[in-house]
Length: 260
Image (cartoon, rainbow, N blue to C red; front, top):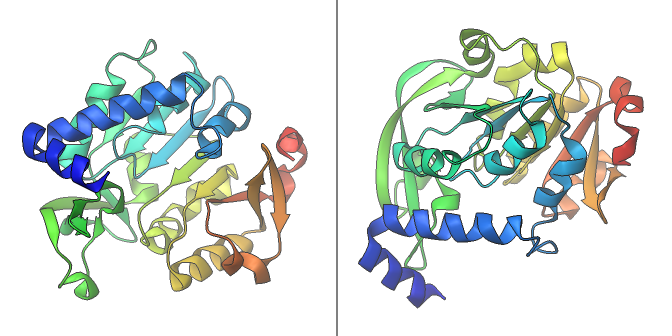
């Protein structure tokens, strides 16, 4: 498989390769394949309803945005955030044929404060370009081999939504490779105001601990997905699982009882 990836990147170039694999992936999910491997994508139909306004942070190649667009329908909106210009271009291609033009892409990173430029890179792991592991570069990443690096603007989460005149968010998906501990607090005003359901990938112990504590302090409860329903998780068990975490505000549980 690694060899095939390398050959395809060499023949098609990285952008061509990403367009090909993302189209195949989206088609497979659309056909109902890979349900066991990616149950979170199929759970979106239950989690997100027509008319909802959702936020896809770390939108990558539109793997979530594509299906969120279907879920929210013509009266809903998908606000996607993807800082890497290469990924944003593929995202636009994949979303361009959506039946409903119910989406908006912001080509920037999110963080605790606005910055004119931050550096992000696409890593090479065991000789393979891993576009899904792209993240903001820090000192610890200095020796990591990279396929490409980009300088991108960073915006505060709440400030971006104010700029876009978004007044209500029902659901947030966030996957930013360990930077969640900065991104989620940047949305504190939005989270406290709207109490959205959150789905977050939490790589790294410190990152996981910080995000969980932040949301628990805002009266959120922790869940994981099992057999197409959310199962409650005690905070002491958060390091025993390697999958996406879901967060539901205590006061909103009755409104989303169909998820449990």
